[in-house]
Image (cartoon, rainbow, N blue to C red; front, side, top):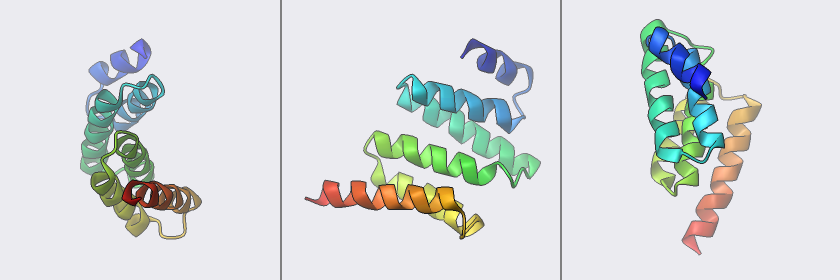
Length: 107
C-alpha cells in the first residue's frame, strides 16, 4: 500500500495509482479510505479523459459503497458505468450482485 501512496503523492493527477490505492485499501477493509481514493481517481480520470479506466473506477467505487451499505450511492456508480459500457461483463456482474444486495436489504 505504501508504494501506491508514494505513487499518488508523486503524480496526484494520474488516476491509475489512485485506483490501485483504492483497491488496496478496499482489500484491507478500509472502506471509507478506499472510497476517497476511488473518488479522487474518478476526478483525475475525468480530467485526463481516461475513458478506459472510468468504468473500472465506477464499479469498484460502487462495490466499496455497497460493502458499507450505501446502496443508493453504489447504484449511481453502477449506472454510470453501465451507461459508458452497456455490454460489459463486469458491469453486468456488479449490477447482478447489487440486485441481490438490494433484495436482501428490502427483506
